[in-house]
Image 1 (cartoon, rainbow, N blue to C red):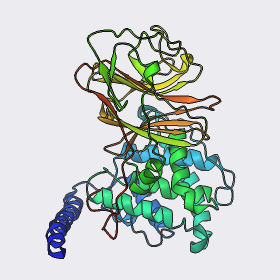
Image 2 (image 1 turned 45 degrees about the horizontal axis):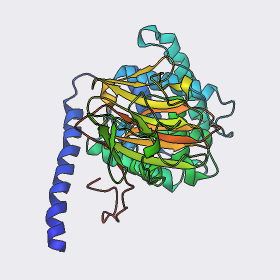
Image 3 (image 1 turned 180 degrees about the vertical axis):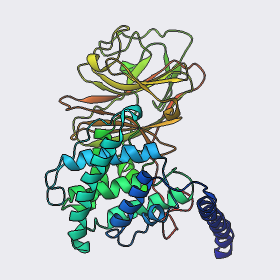
Image 4 (image 1 turned 30 degrees about the vertical axis):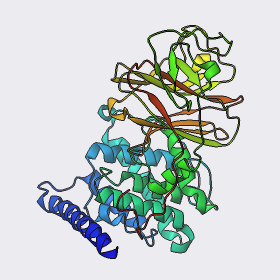
Length: 399
C-alpha cells in the first residue's frame, strides 16, 4: 500500500517542483524592472511578513516571485488607504472597515496614488512599533495562508493578492476571537464587493461554508405544472405537456419554478445545484412573495436570485438587474444563506470562487428557489457530501 502511495505522490512532487521552477524562470527572464508602485507593494509585503510567523506566503511578493500589473497595484493601494482612513486608530480599534468606491483607472492621477501611499506608510510605522506576538493573527489564518500559497504554486490562483488582503484586514481589525477571523473576513469581503469578491476561496473557509450543508427537496405543491419532478424530488426539467393538477395559491403557474419544502428563518444554510447550459434561475423566495403569472421575479417582488439567459447572460435580478461577467458562469452553483448576517451568496462550487452576494436584513422565512426551461438536462439539487479524511499532512495534494 505504501509503495502504491509512493508512486502517486512522487509524480505530484515532481510536478510541483516544475511549477515552482517556472515561477523562478519567469522571474529571471523578466526584462523590465518593477515600477515605483510595484516596488511599494514589495516593501509593504516585507513589512507585513514580519508578523506572519510560521507562514512565508508574503515572501513570494517581496522576493518578486509574484508581481502584479501596475493597475492592480493602484487599486490595492487606493482601496486600503481608504480603509485605513476610515479607522481612526486602526491598530487599537475593532470594527468592519468601510471601502470607498475606487476611481476608474483613467481618472487616477499621481497625486491620488502618492496620498494613498502616505496613509499606508503612516500605518506601517504603527505596525512596526507593535510587538510581533501581539499582532500575530492566529493559527486559523495561518492555515488559510498556507492553502493560498499552495494554490498559487499549483496555478489555481493568478497571484497572492488574496493573501495580502487577508493579512492587511487581520492586522487592521485585531479581533480578540482569532479563531473566527477567516469567516469574518469572508463576510466582510462579500459585504464590500458583491461581485466576484474572492477569486479563490481558501479550503479552510470553503469547509466552513460547506459545514452548513442542508438537505433540500422540491415542494411538489409549488412546482409549475409544466415541470417534471423526479421521485426523490431533487431533479427537475420542463416537460412537453402541462399536468392537470390542483392550482394551489403557492404554485407557480407562469414561470417554470418551484421552491424547497423547508423555509429558513435563522442560521446558516448551504446547498449545491448542477445547472443547465442555457437558462436557469437560483436563489431564495421570501415567504410573502407572489408566485402567480409572469411578473418579474426580482428584489421588488420578494426574490433574491441569479439567472442565466441564452447561455451567455448571467445576471443578478436586482432592480435594475446587475449584469455579471461571463467568466463567472458556473456549471455547479453553491448557494449560501447566512440569515443572521443578512447575506445570500452564490459560488462556483467547482472552482471555489465567489460570484455574487445580496446584502440585506431578513425579516421573514426564505425558501430555496429553483427554475429552468431545459427539456433534456435536469437541474439537480445535490445532497450534502460525506466528508472524508485526507491523508496529506499539509494542504491537500488532490484538492
